[in-house]
Length: 114
Image 1 (cartoon, one colour):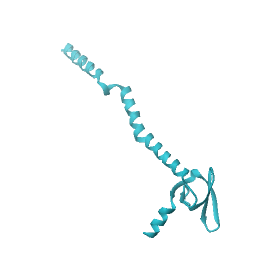
Image 2 (tube, rainbow, N blue to C red):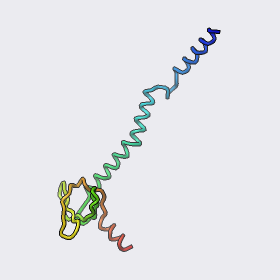
Image 3 (tube, rainbow, N blue to C red):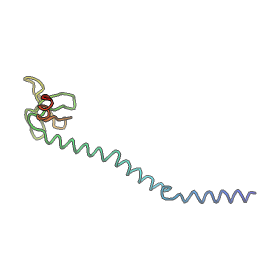
Image 4 (cartoon, one colour):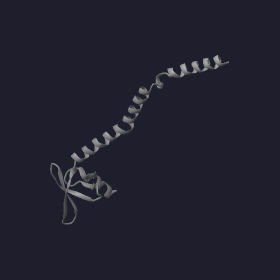
């Protein structure tokens, strides 16, 4: 009877050690890294590229919203900074990286006429 149990456990142990393709911890870790790339890293890079493209394409007259929530109109554009008109006789200089979103002049005109 003892030999029967030892034979049963020996066979069960041998079958579980083979495990197949997904039984290997290295393959499982590699699949996890690939999934993390497509779920986390790639979309973040795409958003960052879109943000950089938006910041580089701003021009005078664009309506913008800053990261702090200030709304204004761009009055001058420099290499690393922009001058924003927040109210009458109130102009503030910001870094370009502080821009959260941009509305072009044509977008504002279409919204007011509709």
